[in-house]
Image (spheres, rainbow, N blue to C red):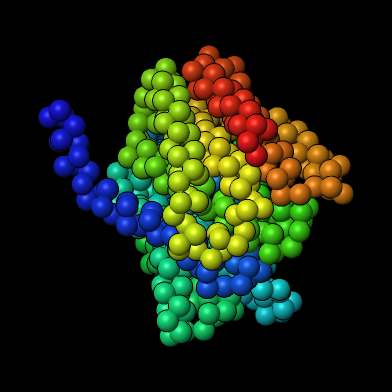
Length: 422
C-alpha cells in the first residue's frame, strides 16, 4: 500500500496534466463535430488523422523512433547532434509545402493535410524525446498541442467570436505552425559540428526500416479515413466514421497513460514480463471499451446532436470500432518491442502482402461495400497485423504467447456479439 501511495504522489502532477490534455484530445474533435458541417468535419479528420498522418510518417523518416534507441539501448551519445539537424528537414518540408500550395492551388483537404503533417511531425518528434528523457508532463502537452488548438477554435466559434468555417481554422493552423518554425530555427542554430551530416545518415540507417514498417502498420491500423473516403463515400461518410472512431478512442487515453509512464521500461524489461502486462492490459482495456460503448446511449444524446442523429444506423460501427481499438493498441505496444529489437525490416514484407490483400478485398467488394463491412475487413487486417508482429518476435525466440491467446479470444468474442446482437 505504501508503494502504491508513493507512486501516486510521485506521478500526481503527471496524472493531472494527462487528464487535462488527453481530455482535450478526446473532447475537442467531438466538440468540433458540433460546430462544423459533417463534410467539413470529414475534411478536418482527413487532414488530421488521415492523409496528414500518412504524410507525417513519410517526412519524419522514422527518426523519432531512433532517439529512444540511441539514447536508451545503443547509448551512442556522440550521435545526438544529428537529432537537431532533423528540424531543418521538417522546416524544409513546411516551406516547400507553402510554395507548392500557392503555385498549384491545392484543394483545401490536401493543404490542411500538409500543414497538419508538419505540426504533427514536430509534436511526435519532440514528445518522443521528452518521453525518452522521462519528462512525461512536458511530453503530454506536446502530444496534445493541435487538439488544444481545436478546442480553442471550437469554443470561440461556438460563441460566434470567430468564423466557424474549416477555412478559418486552416489560417489558425498556419499561425500555430510558425511557432514550430521558430523552434526549428533555434535548434538548427545549436548545430556546431560538421560531423552532424554523417551522424544523421547513421541515424537514418536505423530509422528508415522503421519508417517503412511504420507506414505499413499505419495503413493497416489507423488509415481508415483514407480508405473510407476512397472506397465507401465522400467526406460526410468520413465525418461519421471519424466521429465514432473518436468516441471509441476513449480507451486509447488509458493506453497512452501506460505508454507514457512505462515508455522506458518497454526498452528495458524482459519479454516474459511484458507479455504478462500486455495480456492483462488487453483484457482490461477491452472491458472498459465495451462498458463505454454500452453507456454512451444513456449520456451522449443529451450533449451531441451528431450522435443523436446518426447512432441508430451506425450502432454496429460504434461497437466494432470500440473492439478495434484494443487491436490497434496491441500493434502499437508490439511495435515498441519490434523497434527495440531492430526487427522492423523483418515485418515489412508480410505487412506489404497484408496491405495488398486488404486493398484487394476493398476493390473486390467496392460495389456493395458499406461502412460496416469496411470496419469488419479493417478489424481483421489489424488483428492479422498484430499476429505478424508476434510471429516476427517469435522467430528471434521472443514469445508473446499470452498476448496472442488473449487477442484471439477477444476477436472471436467480438464477432459472436456482432452477429448475435447487431
